[in-house]
Amino acid sequence: MQATAINDTQVELTWNNVLGEETYRIERRIDGTSTWTVAGSTAANVTIYVNSALLPSTTYVYRVSAVNPEGTVSTPSSEVRITTAPADTIATITLTPTAAQVTVAWTGTIADKRWHDVQRKLHSDPVTSFTTVNAARLPATQVSYIDTTVLSGTEYDYRLMSYNDAVTTVGIPSLTQVTYTLLTAPLNLRIPTIVSTYTGNTVPDVTSTSVHVLWDAVANAV
Image (cartoon, rainbow, N blue to C red; front, side, top):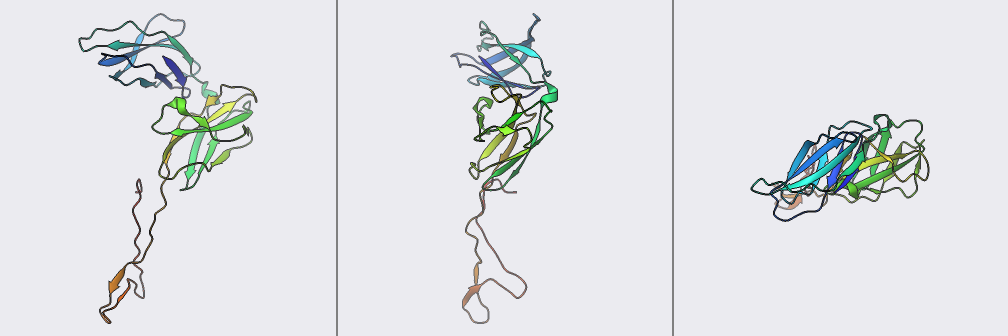
């Protein structure tokens, strides 16, 4: 079992699949206590779970058990510990996308943060799939970054990682993962033709006050 802190109130849990289970039961306790509570469950073959509404700056202990169709509960997995981020170190990010790039902007980081990384993953991938898109770590004075390595029509999650120094390998993630689907630019822009009622010839569908324009539809446009 593995645990990854998403932000100050969420943890993502993953584990290996087993045979014969009907559900998985995820249990949690605060480190230093002995009472386990059920955090949630997943269906058969679903080996990822996001636990929300947690306390900032708190260490949690997790374990998972398999439950078969008869209701028999397996021996729990090994325990994992994970600490949520401090609430006062969280940034909020916003996205301004086009078909070719996404501008990521952020606010709310605290003064002792010296470096930032902008990270991205496909929306369908787990949180452990986040990778840094900026080639060099960004200074604390920078408040935006333009990501030009995106593909049109693709749904991405973004987050900002903030660091106290240049060599820290564990950063503080932004408050939310902002998701956006980049739209594909409309193609095949054209003016249709009609048969003129005066000449009988095929002419563009244009009048003295209007132009009829067509284009191919794209996915996710509203």
